[in-house]
Image (cartoon, rainbow, N blue to C red; front, side, top):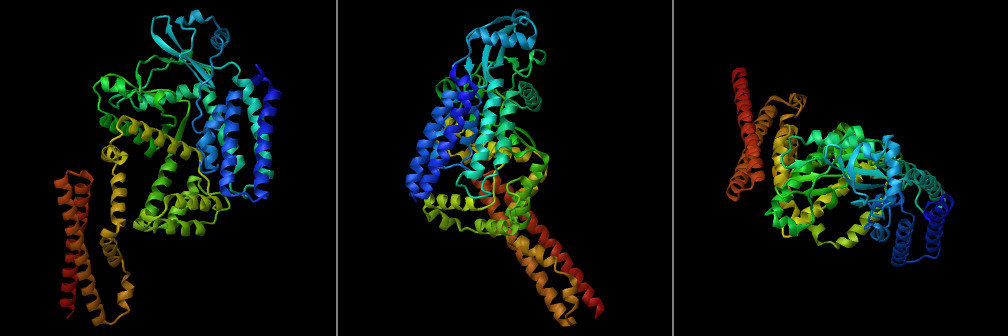
Length: 538
């Protein structure tokens, strides 16, 4: 095939890239309008997509990864490539058989009793066949396409040349994109998908992780038959999650399925560990009894313990308006380029958090989004691939939930799943929730009580005796007043939440009331002790 010729393939890739750079330069020099530039990028996106389909191989994967980087690429370009379908004609069976025999070092019939010679699925990197082991167990055999190893070297060599050219000659603000990092991430992600051993280990880890999770099935893996180019897993029947007609025939409710789907993915997104980065309808099946089947662990992301800690620090920094802490967390998470000025980031965060939401609702959201995109491009900010995958994973699951129950708001479905996750994990999640409650304007009394209690004693000692008495008495009275208001406010929320059967309101109200009551009692005891001390002195 012509697309497998290395020199021709490299020429097609590089010539397209050079053409794109020169055309964008030409539009810049001629001072074209934004609308004309958008139309140019739309045409470029169409040409890019056609070229990828012509060349196939790992370039389809490169295109898919680029389609989720709307933070770096023009929207009109991304719109053309975001629906790239990873589906190509299967290889001839004779070539697939050679791969299997080479990997197993024996004829196929010594490992399998039967195998269908027609692929049940065929993508840019691998093909899947249904087979039976020698004991009759049905299995899915995933085989890497035979031409892939040779194409990978050519495509990445071409990609490195393109990125070097773009870095030095494209009309892109210096420092806007870290091209070395982008190349490294693309290469790392695709090489991970090319190694079926890694996919096998990920599948085993997921199976162990969700072994006690009700209503979830991860197919068993047969390590003795797996290599870096062959993956053998248990064959599991199921219906694609977007087949709502058949799901309705099972008697399953879309809303409950949506809640359970969020319960399955929330721990992956919010806790340290690996998460499924490609949970589309073909990779999540549903069985008649409502069991979810997770498939295809080639594309995964990882939230490390370090990421989890810094992410919590980011949330705390924003919730508690400690913008220095939030900026430091962004830096540690890898969102800031090395030359970023933390002071500028702190000011940006402060301005962003202080936006009046009522005014925001009245703004032209299209104009606001454009202005924010333009602002982001002037800042030394990047989005690490692992977090792009996290966003993609969430957006894909959100789309599936909408398909299952389009009449419901996503937040209404997600809220019960989130509360269940909060209650099933350690106490630190509740601590973070209480910190958030305490940061809201309605509950600023918490901070006032804390601030008043923590006033250094040396400020009081510096005043004369009468001033100290007056100040302290007023101090304690104010503390009691704020604590009482906090207690009453919490009781109101508790009553409303209890009557409306809104769990987060009555639980939050209970917590706030408890804080207010404790503050009132502690302050009262301190006041009595102080008055007694003053009386004994006199």
